Length: 145
Image (cartoon, rainbow, N blue to C red; front, side):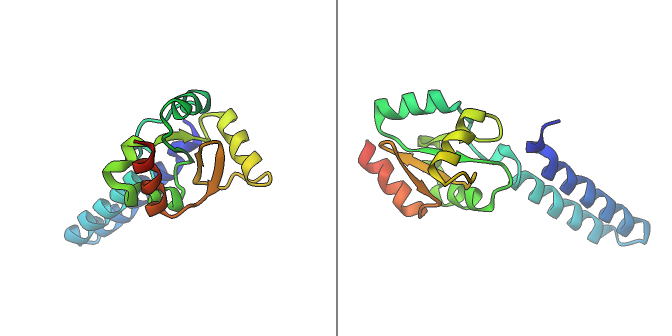
């Protein structure tokens, strides 16, 4: 199992433990609510919320062809999740690259952020922007079209 799934797995297991304890003590309604809450948190912190990740080389090639931004992200990052949710349906137009799956992508992010793997790092026209405003990213999408 990769580290991408560790947090979601821990959330599901923790939720199951809490729900089991509540159910054992007779609070079945609360147990169901806690299980749903922890499962929802696991889903949000998993890579399933994000569009399919590309490799760094492929994303850079596609971006140079059509001008759309490349977003370097990692699962469990609340700022990446914020960007993804604020972009809404527009998020599918951006090229997403998971730095935990692609060492080349992690190197790109470190080069842009003084050796730190700070995400989300958005690259537009070869220039990196760390944790930009989602409205700005959406604007970059409209100018790329």
